[in-house]
Image (cartoon, rainbow, N blue to C red):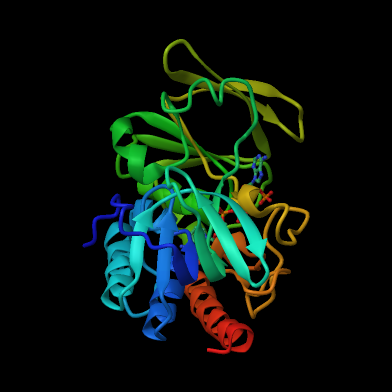
Length: 320
Ligand code: NAP
């Protein structure tokens, strides 16, 4: 694989710059490079996006026996690399327009990058509970990543907050380690797909705390308990646990482009199935775009559509 951290060989001009190296970004880059567009992927954290820290993926078509998230993201990386994409560590600090060209200022780089089109695959991050103790105990019992932190809770009692696919899927995964997983949900019905619900209800290690919200995370050095409120009865209680995993949905990572492209009221980029944003030549793919379903499949779909859109835009605008 390429030297991800070597930014010396980044050139000054590209046809397509993809911001974000998750499934949407890698697919967009692979399609663009395969169509002979000079393509750079910049990723500010680690390549792979959230899939890279997902334990096991069992609903990505073609992998009928399932595949480890880390392996799938490595395959995406290698696939883009095979067609000549340069994949580099880099944080874009600002984007300016110079007629049809887009100018990207990159952290730790002396010169900006000029590109004909941009594909924004910036992803999303986990929402916080926004309660006392959550920030204080982040990394000391409060986690947003079961794959990263699950093994710290061998034979311990933990909690998961949320009722969607993520909460239930990750809650099930955490039963590999924990002696008991209490899923705290603010309603009395789960949002998660039936297949996950059935598995969770059948799992002896999982208990549910319905109609309940966390009001505080408590402890001395580490998390020791959660303050819980029943939203129907207003009753308050304390749940003793060694750790809490928060999976209550995601917020789009659109800080960089909030003044540039149109966002919806939740902060996701407005772009229809063509993935074109409000700015010609700038496309949005994957979790960062408004959509009814956030999956690896919908991310890779967006990535391929965005690359084709970029190719068409470059042809029409730059006469190539
Ligand atoms: P989600 O579907 O938005 O679910 C968020 C859950 O958190 C909901 O149950 C919601 O409660 C609860 N919640 C939201 N804000 C809360 C708050 N402030 N306090 C307490 N609870 C709160 O998010 P997600 O589970 O991360 O899933 C996001 C997308 O990824 C979905 O499209 C999902 O299908 C997809 N996904 C798919 C898979 C898979 O297929 N393998 C795995 C993970 C995620 P309410 O139900 O009351 O709104």
